[in-house]
Image 1 (cartoon, rainbow, N blue to C red):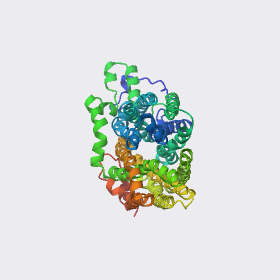
Image 2 (tube, one colour):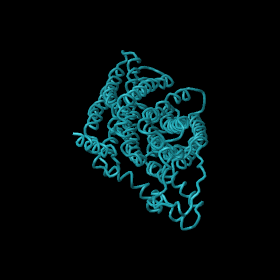
Image 3 (tube, rainbow, N blue to C red):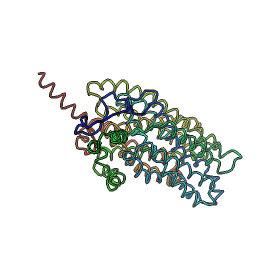
Image 4 (cartoon, rainbow, N blue to C red):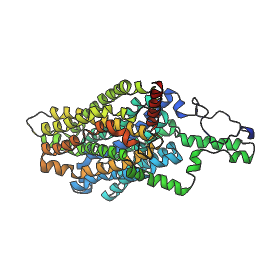
Length: 502
């Protein structure tokens, strides 16, 4: 399907311009691939993301058995989750920006294979040191889908069609962590050995990786155009003609030094120079940290306070899934009614702020869900069902915030979105890695109600963020060095046309 049609090139056909697509309907352009193929790629990418994030939280339900197996303290056991997220931080340096240089598929295939193999080290770990080291490297390679996945969607889907695919991908970022304790709880209560949760992770990872290798093609337009240029050079009539064939991508990033600069420096450069990215990342980091705090807080609320078993505690995460499903439906509706109608007027590039309607609904829902969970979960006299219902609000709020802001970053940075995702993943993974280390102590010291309230007040403080972005985001983007801001250029054209019409 993706094989190029035969291209012949003769000296008289050469034009002093870089190789590009053969018009707006070029079948080699990923945005012109069939709808069926786009959805297959979207679902495969979301699937490997679910798998990578599933492994981050799955062992949390087996904490007691890990403590018994290696004779360690509870504090050390929390590191099993945190060190995996720390791996996300370092992996994001390489894989997001690297995919802009060598291609999405090559990065994903190599990293997912390595991630799967390192799970074997966790299965056969003879001591806690081996388990922690292999967990770190699993997280290191598992960060790849989180940073590259959003870029794959940007490669495939035009802005007006990106709403539902982005909802599915954004949901996969935290659906995996929610599924981890659910599955892990049943494994931990079974008669299987302590390491069977890692066997489940290994089987899931291996299956996801094999499917990805078979069904995922290269989608990065920069890389695809470079391959096209290489084919044209081979078919060129003379060496002189071949030398005249190039792409902008090849000219910009041919040296090792440039590749290192892009891979290591661009995410930090963007964090240093991009207020939009910094502000979005701060908000998403708090929300992501809250998600991982729940993995440690739920056992305190539902097992210690309300007497549920480990498997029953895992089932509580179904509420998060229900909330995220409702959020996905609402986000799709908001996109169709409040974003797509503006698409034609803005010539295919509506302001990125039109993506934030979901977050405007989700941010208050997150505040409500956090206080609800804390104060209904604080008392044994209140049924466990009351705080369980609160998890629906939490899933609803977290999903809408993630979907809106991840899509906002895609629309803001376009060809640089992989680097933006890398920077975002680095910071929010650092925050998420820290949360499990103090969540239990915080809930035990402050009590369930006040510990949840502390998180709720932080969420309340940040709740106006999507509204402020909607109002002031365009002004901030106008000063960006990386955001193309095509909508701002179109806005000037619209103003001129209105002026001349008068």
